[in-house]
Length: 395
Image (cartoon, rainbow, N blue to C red; front, top):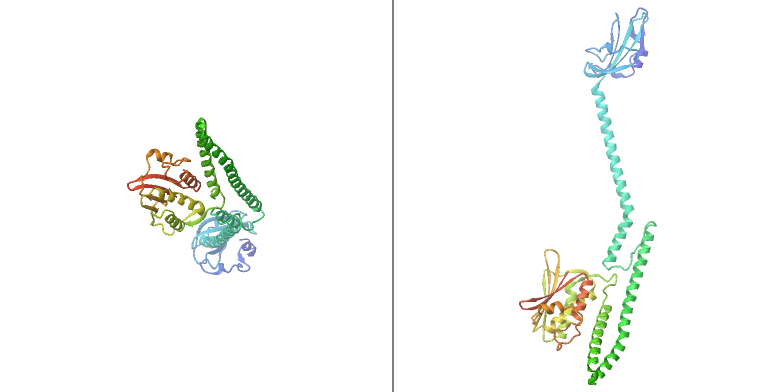
């Protein structure tokens, strides 16, 4: 617009002309969408070569300032600019330039398309950068999580690996706590075992003296009380020794063990221990089943229950593993023995409970079994069956 104003030559007689064409060649292409027009009162109107038809409204140019508006152009809606200048005789010279609105729309669309492409690329780059930062930044925490998983599964005794300075103190403190806790548990187990062993000798002396007192009729009552109490003390000592021998409560003791593999050698041992009984293993969809259990405690639990069943069975003892649709697993020890009454089942887990003094045992087996099952996170139930008796361990 300003270039057009500079190129106009006004003659003394008021006629107007252009010293040279505009620098933009599109004003010379017919109906290109770029047009200009110069008009003055009583003079011939000059138009660009591109305006082969129609005209521009000169009334848009009514001020010395450049103004613009949207008007109808030769080839459609056009953004039109205009301003006026005084001629030598005081007449108004109107300068008007127009550009098709479609041209602006095209430029806008191209700009938006290019901008969108770059913004999408930038978003993809930022997303990739963010994912990379998260992946590499949180990788130490992921390694820490896997290390904790190995620790919980019993595959490691401490958090292994090198970690960044930000979380290294946490790992160090946690490892120190784990070792301290393990030492405390081990020390407590040793102390419990030592205490139980140290009580055995004086308890044996007291028992011997009570048996001697029983030979004196005058002291028979007191002797019976002493023998009863020493028997209870001996049962408690045996119970605590059995707990101390197990690995229950030790950290890192759990391993993934195959239940049938652990049960088979126990069944063979029980067959030798009770040669007149027949021990059988049954599997119901549990072949190769693995559970995160301490193998020592699990073996001890099965041994107690199978030995108890062997003592009371008439001929048959069966160990059945059954996998249920809800994901639970049950190990059921069945025997064809006489079973228990409701009252006996209520007392079966008490320390020292014995229902037949003719059978060998100390009355501690089921109490220890229940303690082992509870520590392993299992449930232990006793129930009568149509063919005898069953002890069910549920995982």
